[in-house]
Amino acid sequence: MKVAVVRFPGSNCDQDAFHSLREDLGVQAEYVWYEETDLSDYQAVFLPGGFSYGDYLRCGAMAARAPVMDEVRRFAREGRPVIGSCNGFQVLCEAGILPGALMRNTSEKFVCRDVWIEAQTKRSPWTSQVDRPLQIPVAHGEGRYVCGSDGLKKLQDKDQIAFRYVGESGNPNGSEFDIAGVLNLEGNVLGLMPHPERATKPILGSSDGLMILFGLKLVAAG
Image (cartoon, rainbow, N blue to C red; front, side):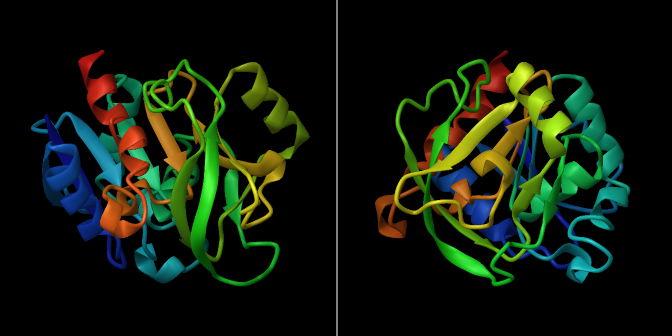
């Protein structure tokens, strides 16, 4: 399979995504510039972390309106795999592909450390192989997931909560219900604040991210 790693002005985790997909997951990955309007040669999309457009207006707000996002929406509608980590999660929410929004951390500080997350559903290919807590790094200043009481009830009723922060590492940003990642209704789109692409080999401190990234293959396989 071939994965499009979308690059926006200000992306800084695109190389992490590119190399983890190619070297550790074993799939073909290619960089795709944000002005691209045709992703028909690809089977999956990865929206990487960083500071797209310098985080002006709101994190991910400008990137959500980039030309390539029409193709990302098509991928989502067609049931193809789409994953966004950190800024990529913010972009997916701003684009309306995923519910909720990401706000400034309650500490009002940038947080960069390992956290523990736990899968909350088995219905998604992204989480179906996760049978234990995962150690994954975070690096963000605006990762507090908010959706309101009504939104939270909908997420719970529709089984769209993918991951929650657990363990002694705690909730690094003050997210509602300790939410670390959410799914779209169909389960083919995953957004999460932790960086699975930075946890794909022991030398990085953890290889737990591969258990999440393997969902790319499972979604593509149907």
